[in-house]
Length: 174
Image (cartoon, rainbow, N blue to C red; front, top):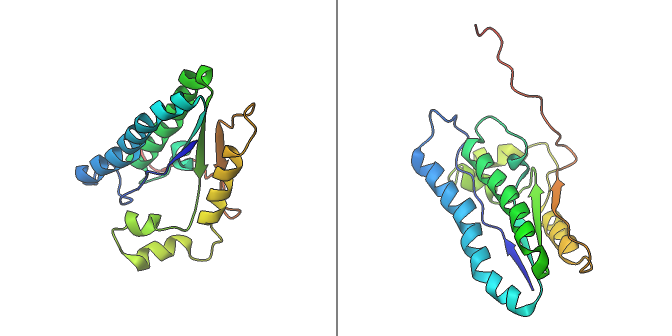
C-alpha cells in the first residue's frame, strides 16, 4: 500500500515584508497540514497491513532558497524533515518513506501561484524545457517499486535547463 501526499501550492513571489499573511497561512495549511492529516489518516491501515510506503511531494525550494520563496520554501523544508523523521519513526514497522523534490515543472503550479494569471504563469516556462507531470510520476513510481529491502529517502530532480543559482548578493549596502 502506497500513499502519495501531493499537497502543495505557492502563492505569489513577493518579498517577506510585502506579502499577504493570508497567503502564508494558506501555504502552511496546504503544504504542511495537508501532509500531516493525510499521513495520519493512512498510517493505521499501513500498520495493520504490516507494510506501506508514504511518498511526499516536496520541492527543491525546501533545499535551495530563492527570492520570493519565503514561506513556500519553508513549508517544503518541513516536508523534507518530516519525511526523514517519519522514516526514523516507522523503520521498525516496515513502512518506507520517500520525499520526491521536483524543480521547474510545468503544471498548474504557476497558475495557482499567480492566482489564475495565465500570461504571467506561462512566462515561468518560456524558452525552457521543464519537467513534466509524467517525469515526476516516473520518479514516484520508481521509488515506490523498489524491493522491500530498499528505501529511497529523497529524490531531487531538476529540468536539464535548471541548476543551482548563486546566492543573492546586493552591492552598495553599508
